[in-house]
Amino acid sequence: MMRTETFSFSIHATAGAARAGVFTTPHGAVETPAFMPVGTLATVKALDPRELHEAGARMLLANAYHLHLRPGEEIVAQMGGLHRFMGWDGPILTDSGGFQVFSLATLRTVTEEGVEFQSHVDGSRHIFTPESVMAIERALGADVIMQFDHVIPGQSDYATAREASERSVRWLERCERAFARDAGCGMRDATGSWGKDPASEAVPRPASRIPHPAQALFPIVQGGIHAELRREAALAIHDMGDWVGYGIGGLSVGEAKPEMYTMLEVVDGVLPTDRPRYLMGVGFPEDLIEGVRRGVDLFDCVAPTRMGRNGTAFTSEGRLNVRRAELRTDEQPLDRECDCATCARFSRAYIRHLFAADEMLGPRLLSLHNVHFLMTLMRTARDAIATGAFDAWSRAWLDRYHSRPVSVP
Ligand SMILES: [Zn+2]
Image (cartoon, rainbow, N blue to C red; front, side, top):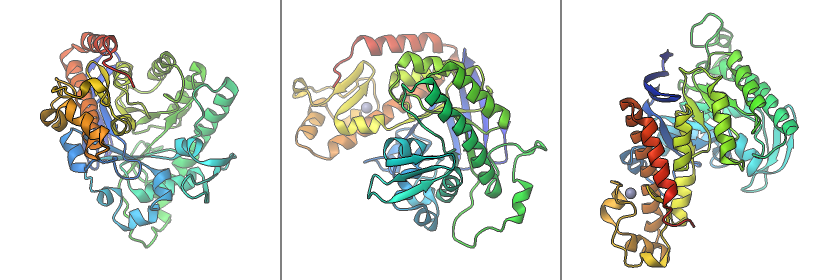
C-alpha cells in the first residue's frame, strides 16, 4: 500500500494484471478501476455535478489549457479554486494542456524551453513551459495535476516519437522542480519522507487568495507505438523518483487498437504495481475493459458526453444511434439492463423525438446515460475482479458487445 499524508492507493484484489483498489485523495476516495468524466472547461457538458455524483462519478477531469484561456487560472483561484468554482467536492484531476497545445492550438513553435502557440479561441499568443503549466495547475488547485508533455500523432515514426518522448522526460524533471518548490507531494525526497522540498521553505508564499491544497504530480509515459520507447520512458520516469501515480499518454490518437493494447502491456511490465495508472483520453467501453485487463486503474474521455450530444448511446449490445427512424415507436429504454435516470423513465421513441426536434433535453439525457453506463461498467469490472470472475466476465462482455452492434453511426 502506498501512502502519503494525503494520498494513498490500496489494492484489494487482483485478476492477472487487473486490480481492484482504492485511490484516496484530499477530496475523497475513488474505487478503482474508475472512469473520470471530462469537464474540459470546469463543466461536464450539460450535466450538473449532482447528477454526475448520482450516476456514480467520483473523480472529474478539467483542463489547464482551456481554463487558462477562459476564464484564466487567476479567476478560478480567486473564486476559491476549482472544486469550489465548479461545485464539485470530490477529487479532480487537471490535464496539463500538452494534448491541447499540440492538437487544438495553431501556429505552434516547439523548442526545448516550451511551446509558443496561438489560442484556438481568439488567436492570442501564449507560451507554455513546464514551469508555467505547473503554476497554472497549482492555481487551479486540482488534487492530481499532470506534467506538461510533448504529444505527437499516433502514427508518428520512431525518430519523432523518440524526440517527443525524451523531451517529455526532460520536461518532467523541470515540472517536478517547479512543483517541489511550491507544493511537494509529487514524489518522495532523498530522505524517504513525503512532503515539502526543504529548499522550498525559503520561498515565501505569495500574498494572494490562491489556495494551497495538497496536490500530487503525475508523470506521463510517452513513446508513441514503439515498445522500446515506451519501455525506456517508463524506466526513466520510474528511476527519477517515487511517484504517487503514473499517466500513460499519447494513446487512442489514431493508432490501431492492438497497438495500444501492446503498449499497455509493455508499460504494465515496468511501472510499479502498487501505484495507480491512468490511461489518458481513453473511454470507449471495449477499451476500458481491455485497459483494466492490462493493469490500468483510471480512465478519462470526452466520448460519453460528446457521443451523447451527437445522438449515440452506449449499450451492452453495442452503440445505438438514437436518430434512426425505426426507433420512432420503440417503447424500450436505451438499454434494458441500465438503471440510470434516463433509462428508468424515458423510451427510445421519446429520446429520438427530442433529437429530431433539436430539444436540449435529448443531449442531456443521453450524456447522463452514457456516463452512467461507463460508471456501471467499471463497478461491475471491479466486482468481477474481487470475486475472481473477471477473466470470464470480461471475455463474455466483449463478445456480446462486439457481436451485435445495434447500430453504429
Ligand atoms: Zn441508461
